[in-house]
Image (cartoon, rainbow, N blue to C red):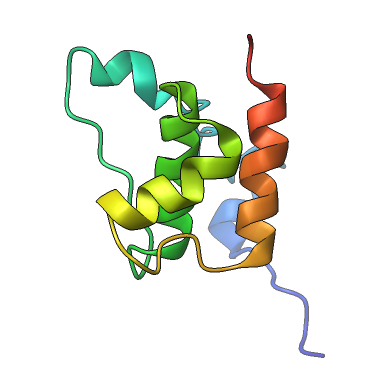
Length: 100
C-alpha cells in the first residue's frame, strides 16, 4: 500500500473544507412523462442487454404483460435483447412494484 495522499501546503492552510466535492447528481427523472414532450434515449454499452431491459419495462408500463415483455422487445427492437436471467427477473420484480 502506498503513502496516504497529502494535500499541498497551500491547501492545508485553507482548512478541512478546502477540498470541495462535486454536487450529488440529481435523481433521474422518470423517462415516460418526459417522452410525452421530448425525445428520451436509453442506451448501454452494447445496446442490447440493459437497453433491452429498460425498453421491456417501458413496454410493461405501456400495457404489455410482464411475461410477454421480453418477447415483445426481441420482436420489435433486437432479437438478443435482455441477455441474462437476472435482467429477465428484474423486469418481473420491477413490474410488480409499478403502480396499478
